[in-house]
Image (cartoon, rainbow, N blue to C red; front, side):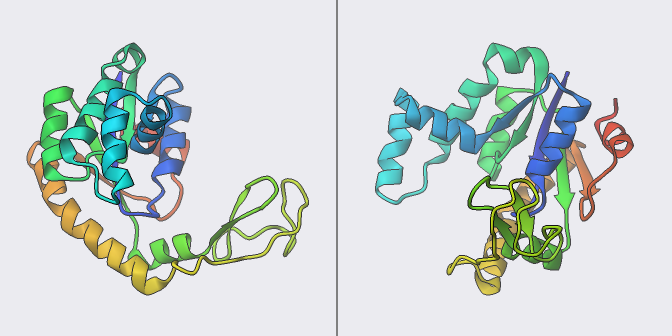
Length: 212
C-alpha cells in the first residue's frame, strides 16, 4: 500500500501522472480535492454547507474546513485499505502539518517542468466541443487540422479571454511563494521526490519512482 502526495505547478501534468500511477497500482485510490469539494457541495453535507458559505461570498475556504474534508475522505475504508494518491492538497504549510496528523505519507512527488513549457501546455490547450477530446496547439495537434481524431467533429483553437501569459506567470509566482515552505517541510522529513516531468515517463520509470 502506498500513500502518495502529488505536488507541482499548474500545467505540470498531475492528472496524467495520477493516471500512470493507477496503471502501476490499479487498486490505489485517486483522491482529488476538487472531487471532494464537488461531492460535499452536491450532497449538501454539513462540511459542504460550511464551505459553500465562504464560496458564495467569494472568499477562500479556510484551512480548517478544507482539512476536515480531506480528513473525512482519507478515513474512508477504501482509502485506508488500498492507499491513495492525493492531488491538490496540501496548498499551505498548515495543511501539510495537518496532513501529517491525519495519516502517514510515504512520499511527496514534485513534478518539475520548465516554466515556458507549462505556459505552452496551458495556453495551448483546447478541446473538441462534441466529445471533449483534449488537444494542444503546440504539443498535441489533431492528425488532420481542424478535425477531431476521436469523433470527426470540426474543431478550432480558441483561447479564453482571461488566459494570457502575464496572468499565468503571476499564478506561477503565487504557486512558488506558497510551495517553497511546503517543499522545505517535506524535504526536511526526507519525504520529497523530485521528478522531471517535461516528457511522459515510461512504465519502467514509474515503477522505479514508486519503489515497487
